[in-house]
Image 1 (cartoon, rainbow, N blue to C red):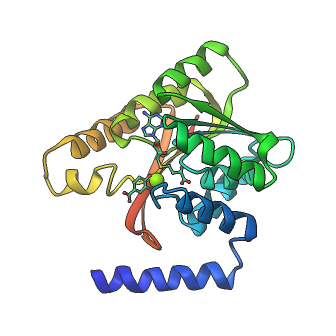
Image 2: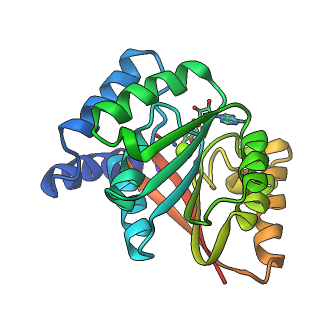
Length: 225
Ligand code: SAH
Ligand code: DHB
Ligand code: MG
């Protein structure tokens, strides 16, 4: 297993280089986040590119992210929505939001990215109350135990055809723990989330396991109808 994970990481690095997935702006955002002491848990370059592609595949102009960190994935989302598009990203840590602000500005997408500071549950309530245009893609990547709650909010903030992506389903999101019968908040969170997806007639979903630069994990992909 370890050998597979290590080799997959080498392959991931190779593919990112061979396809020139990351440009200087993205590399600078990653480096600045690490230099500021933020945890190195942003999506990999290939995962960021996939997010960006998902936005483009649905012709998305508006994306919502829960969990900004240093704005690395937000830059990918901003590139997906394009020049006239908008990314709204939610972050609870002032320092993360501050680093993210600088990173998205430096990457040239500052005008397209709005960072809402505070607990995501509160910001999601505010967004629902404000009644703006629906989001075309929602990316859940914050405190995994609240994913079911964030998904319920996402359903209120989207339209038929919108896509919902949930990061870290297998590890932090608890599907591994649930599958192995390990009790605790991670497994309980996964079971609650998966039951909600299963029982929600408006969602068509799949769960994809991944292996690469961040080891073994996976994401949930769903479309709203
Ligand atoms: N999407 C980022 C990584 C996010 S890491 C990327 O790939 O580049 C998870 C982030 O969620 C952290 O910055 C953390 O501070 C934030 N977070 C955790 N709990 C939160 C909450 N309740 N509300 C909003 N943000 C939260
Ligand atoms: C970790 C990875 C993530 O993608 C994330 O959003 C949170 C934590 C981790 O590996 O710990
Ligand atoms: Mg993540």
